[in-house]
Length: 481
Image 1: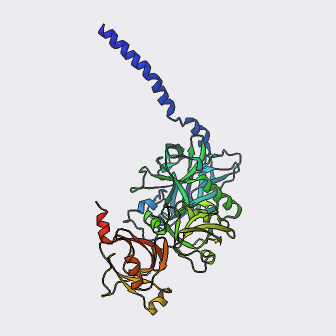
Image 2 (image 1 turned 45 degrees about the vertical axis):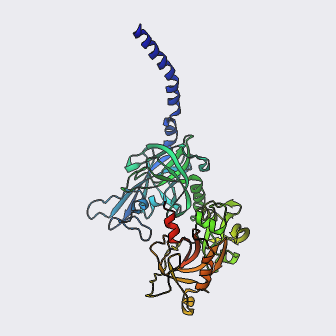
Image 3 (image 1 turned 30 degrees about the vertical axis):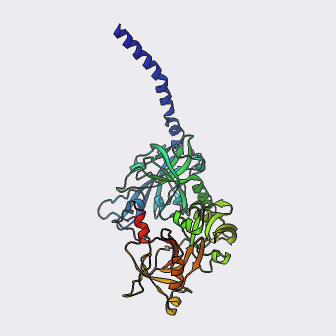
């Protein structure tokens, strides 16, 4: 009898679990139909370059092989060393067909400096390709092969992607053509170093050398991005992949097809992120906007009346939620257009009209500047642990400033990024920015600030300016509990 009861219970539990098992199986995506329909429009791209030695990937200034960010910047094209004395460097990548007459999209770094580009279709046909145009800032290249009646991809809306949504990559990792990998969207609007114009889609899709330039699909079989970069410490996949949103890519390719180049706008400001401390200093209710740390002399922003210390909250009615939003909005604006900026100044919002000019292709690193050393002696440290001195007339002429205080020494307890040699131009207190030129003036402002409240200052360093929040050493130790 006991055996019969056990059998009955087991049968009941099995019957109850079957619907749940079937439901779970139905929830797991099946990519086979997507691959069958879309893989024909994905191509393998191989390039040949005449070189005397194996080239190293171009790195940003200051990044070498010992830098922990080296592998992050290294693009994932496998460079084949070849045999001794060989003159050809070969690389691999992926791409996809966007028009039946042979236009293709890939990454600019896949075809950069290539002497010969070969496109291999899914049906094994091979074509020589020419570059219609390439844009290094977004890493997009438009290619053309002489063919007709080709299969093309369908385009989706990257703005409708949701974090956690399934996505699929098709490409040629390590030369293995038509390889399929899948994962989810890990984040959206991701900003990466040296990439100001692309709000990257972050995924956990397995991407490896050779996947560069391949499409990222949603489950409807629509291209939503172009696989471009990985974060890696060993050159291979480590769970972090980044794709260029397809709307960014299509805007770039349309300009490349029409004129062979991409026009972008600029307004001539250097900006920084608004932290919680900076927001409090400027009287903002939220940590939003782009804080203007310096303005280009005689540039569009200066002509419009933009000042260091302004926080840009909106650009042509579009919110600037974080500083990285502003370069994308300005860059997408046609040069010559007049745009309206909503800025926060002295505790109130106001509108400013600025004429956008064209951005040239020269990249400026605002972090570069002259190094200064502290003198042997100076006044006693203030409660922030700083030794400051007033600028003399010659220093003001050399720095081209009307006032300011030089930082002679910084206490080891002061954990801000302030350095000896920096020039404090202004102090922000109670939402207002006040230029400073004497120690008495600075100390009066400092005495009116509660010890536990941070003091935000505008700092000149070399040729650049930035806002920093300072705290007294005692208040910092109190916050570590």
